[in-house]
Length: 247
Image (cartoon, rainbow, N blue to C red):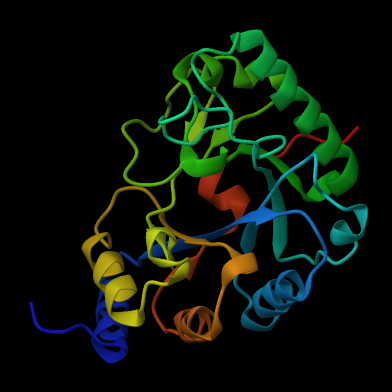
């Protein structure tokens, strides 16, 4: 395949839209917690572009002041509870290791759920995005009892409903290269990965991490959000359910 550029990518998006099958994009940003210049820039970009953002917030670290900055284009998801790595030495990072009693993990998730619901009010959507995109299956089965109705991780999902009452919609391109110094993956690689996923049956998710973005990452997002053709979905549209009333 010839090198993909912005023009070719946009032409493909427009072609699919005009054929009656528009590409559906959504945007999730992870590791939100504190008020910092990068967080403000992210929220301003969502506002100026009109692209809704699903902000995955770490409950324990969340500053109340952050929620005062949110606007109508922002919904809050639950990003674990404390984002602490509890994996055994040598294992992949996770907040929810298999060796931990599942009820301890459930209690932690439930506490985070309550705190975010209190802080974010009606902007909170009961969707769980586990840190490092890893979570044990026996914990998934208990999330609906807490009040969580959605799950978002990374890569093509194995099932739209990994547990009864739990809908899964993932992200598919992380624009940060974590193993290469937390740098931007580059326009060529981001567009290549996105082009491969345009025919997916689930909404195509872009994953960002505002706290580590460099100039190239911000510039890429500005270009992406200005493209003609795709339909950007809100969290409610992505997970296709009505948020429960805040009480």
